[in-house]
Each structure stands twice: as C-alpha cells, then as structure tokens.
Length: 141
Image (cartoon, rainbow, N blue to C red; front, side, top):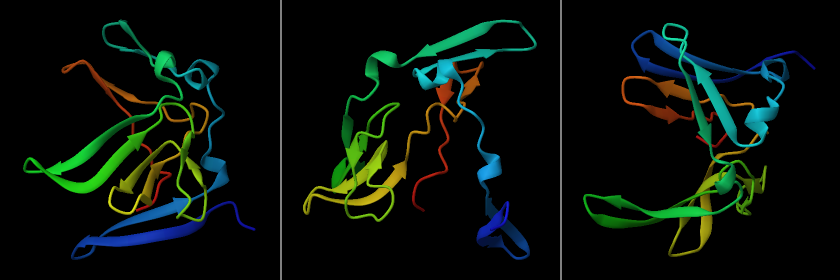
C-alpha cells in the first residue's frame, strides 16, 4: 500500500506529457455548506461574496439528448445534482453515479462522468461572466 500511485500518462505533443496520480491523501474533508449543495466564493480583490444554492435541485434528474449540428446522436446526458441517484449498471464501480451518458437505442449506460463526494469539489466562479463551473475528475475517461 502506498500513499499515491501512478494512474495514467498521455503525450499531448512531442515530449509534452500529462501525468495523473491518485491518492487518498488528496481527499479534502467535505465542507458542510457544500455537502448541502450550496457554495460561496469571496473575491479577494473586491471582497464581494457570491453564493450558489442548488439545494432545491438536489437528487432530481436532469437530462438532455446529445446533439451534433442539430442532429441527435443517440446519446442522452443525465445529471443528478449533489447526489449519486443515477444507476450505471454496465460499469463495474460505482453503480450509483451523479452524471452519465446513456445510449438511447440500447438503454445502456455507456460512461459515467462523475460521482458526488459530499461537496468535496469546489466550483470555480468567474467574475467576468458571472458563472460557476464544476470540474469533476472522478468519472471514466
């Protein structure tokens, strides 16, 4: 058992690599506010505080068909904010996920995109465009 292990490497261009390590030491204890599907960000330059409250959407299922140049591709994206309420049986671990892509012709879960980790992911807030983005790296490639 080691504290960290090498997980993947990809060469983007000649001699330009991206390495991915995995470690349980990288886990940050969840923030109680975040665990309730609520986030706050304070801009250190302006001292303005911004809040995002998705608690009313927690556990609901949101979905949309994937399109390519106004044509449906046959895939549907599913998202269950702040909860692992989606079942992705075709994948080995974990079967309960927060977001996934389903093949609408077969009804099979093709890939899971993320799992909810009790608020451990802190979203980024962009002052210039006034929007939040979440980056989850715990799904399948």
